[in-house]
Figure 1 (cartoon, rainbow, N blue to C red):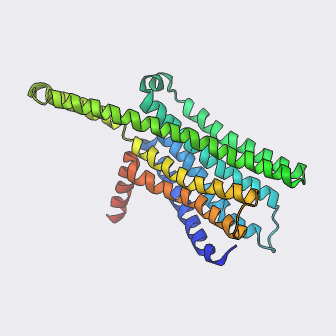
Figure 2 (figure 1 turned 90 degrees about the vertical axis):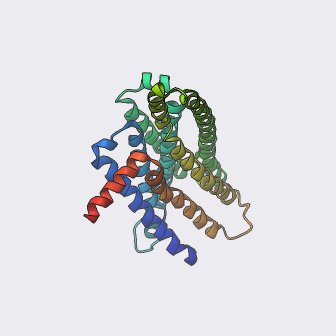
Length: 289
């Protein structure tokens, strides 16, 4: 591991585990946060907590000659948590996409069991990918086959998820922008009628509250796309030996980007998710007094 990357790698890992651990504690402790959207955030926070452990700390101990470590199992563990972070972001985005873009269909099909089933699928998919990578590593010693496994099991999966997330965010942006324009026009039309203005303004406020999670999803997906675009470029370059500089340093830069993405997510929740932001403020007010 390049020496200059050790300190930022560990600092980011500590920030990732601390921040996401706090999110897990906050959502599970407060019953007022037990909503459909927050269950998806909770699952994503657990996956990001695993990323904080799997990338730098686990790699450090696995590369220690005094520690007994099966590197193949470690790599499966490594990619399991990274893909879990991706799939859980996809399910969170899908939930908010349906709520914003197709609200009637969303509320009609919403049940108490559905979030749990979707979250379970979000964990089973990366488990299946990690298991297939592990079996492939044990089944063959062919460098070509291993490169194909890495390209399909890692980069192809991330690229497909990135494309779906990009589409969902664009659709959310278009719908929210259109709805806000329509509601602003409605609000201006009723301003002249003082009797109906108050009730109309309250109705507009309730509808706008429904779109309040849009900035959260947009911020999470934009951060993901920036980090994972660079990550997949490095993965493909390391796999197919197209790097003109030290591949070991490139691998550590890749790890930094992965942890950075998971480290920033709790800050996004704290600043852009209204109910979580409110509970964080209440918690700190209680600590002060």
